[in-house]
Image (cartoon, rainbow, N blue to C red; front, side):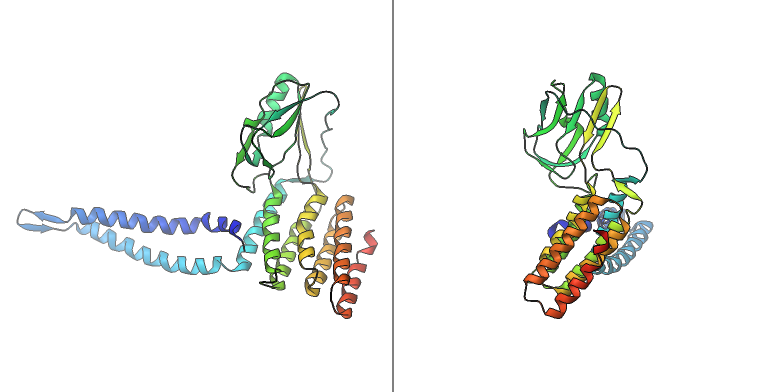
Length: 330
């Protein structure tokens, strides 16, 4: 499943509660043990404290049983796929808007500009667009970011164009960290799902059915955008100020979802056939012409890979038959 998916185990709230229960019980028992002593000639035992320690010990036994069951369930690949799929649905919902919602006109990108540089290196995790727009509006500037959440920015690397060319501090409106996060980055969860499929299709594992399960979730995530559109480049205006932030567009999302899986599963007939069936469903759900063109390009690549490898002629015929279902979208 890959080391990046260990984040799901670290962030699990139930695991943290069980660990906290054990630490609290241990600390409480030490405190009760210290209270045990003698009162003159008679021994002193804090009965209420001991009863509380026994109760916490029983809770710890229950917590341990739950933890063993939960940990065994958490390492199941289908459980991990389902969790990452939920993250992807949430991220895509936040990055899209209903069809018909008006788009802000883009800024004027002509004329001289100055470059705003990053003061540190790392991954762009999120952009405080409201803060940046307030600064641009106060000075009547047009700011076009050159990076988006998920991009890696080197120290002193260019992050924005500012028109007219003036000094404007942009870096403190970006949250830059050591790793990518799902915040404002819908491709992050998608790439985690793709990583599971690509690892499953490696020659060392050769597990096409895990890849098929990932394709099902990717198709569901893509079709969840029916009636919606990805915002892509977001433009905000306030007064005479304007801020443009690049984002994920439809064809880029389709490429991130399916291209690597098709390229790595091109020798597996069952994976290629299932990928073509999912691509047909996505083409049916989406009205975006750019996304449909990307779907057709990936389908053509899947057919070319299947035809160029040592695949049984009957399997090649099945692949071509599934691909023919996409011809009506050309």
